[in-house]
Image (cartoon, rainbow, N blue to C red; front, side, top):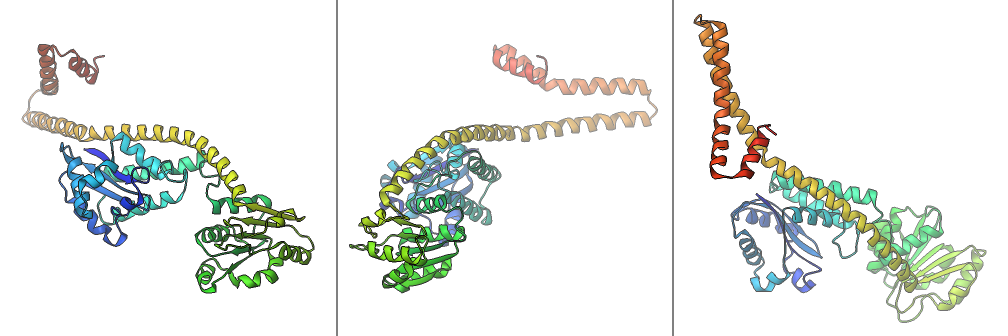
Amino acid sequence: MTLLALGINHKTAPVSLRERVTFSPDTLDKALTSLLSQPEVLGGVVLSTCNRTELYLSVGQQADFQEALVRWLCDYHQLQPDEVRKSLYWHLDNDAVSHLMRVASGLDSLILGEPQILGQVKKAFAESLRGQSVSGDLERLFQKSFSVAKRVRTETEIGSHAVSVAFAACTLARQIFESLAGVTVLLVGAGETIELVARHLREHQVKQLIIANRTRERAQSLADEVGARVISLDDIDQELGQADIIISSTASSRPIITRGMVERALKQRRNKPMLMVDIAVPRDIEEQVGKLPDTYLYTVDDLQAIIDKNLAQRKAAAVQAEDIVLQESQDFMAWLRAQAAVETIRDYRAQADELRLELETRAITALKQGADPEAVIHELAHRLTHRLIHAPTKSLQHAARDGDTDRLQILRNSLGLD
């Protein structure tokens, strides 16, 4: 039995190829059924995200199973092998184990240490478990990988530093305000970055969220999700004084928030400080706003400096995380190798019990027929010893006759002679 990871990801293939080998959620059951019907495939989990498609498999010992799996993958997605082969990677046994642990821990992600991948791995595992596609060794591997990912998060700081613009903006806000529970936040725009910011802020339970956008309908669905109030861009001037934090990201070619607007807001606020984060290019907030007292203006370049510093800290934490993965993968492989002996041990014990029962029955019968108890015990001991040492003796003789000193030493060790 072999553990195998076969995949394609953002490091090995462009999005134009990755999107052609994805498995959609509504066809995943069909894909798993087809995959498990392949020769030598004992169990499987399919992980398919925007950045990677990976098959985690337990397979038999067939020599050409790798080529068979490539053909299956290409046939399923109606691709030619030459289109995919150069972008595929293979990991076997210990390498497959450590690869899954690295993926679950965010060490193999496009953004180092990002936490979303763990949820995606758990979902993929749950889908395969529901479809009864997971073999025992794969189930143990995935459960172990989840605990390793948790350990990496707990024992390292790989996820403690913001490395996305949205998260960096929220981190900056938390650094300036001790608690976000009492602040009002104005978000300008309704694009992807603002969506991420809004979700981050919702998790920190800000007092009030206001979303300003050119099109109210576009902002309304996000507002409904995060419990925000929607205003138009024209309303910003009169609403600005309520905001403790302003985060802006639009596609406007001209500034949306001017120095005059902020001056009026500060007067209304009686110079209570304002944090303004402009992550738009071109900028949404006039540069002169940063010169006003009680106003703290950060641009996307300022956030990038934070991100670069934090990414360096994540890379340092990743070294510690890699050590954890190395240790845990070695421990798992030791456990897996030990399982290979379980069936042999079970068979050996069953054989010994069968022999014991046979000789025990013979001895009891002799005693019931009036045989001398002492003679029965001696015969039982003699027969039991002779039968138990017969096979090991033969093996020792063969090893000695063949001059196989290594096998002879292994047999001596297994018999407790050294």
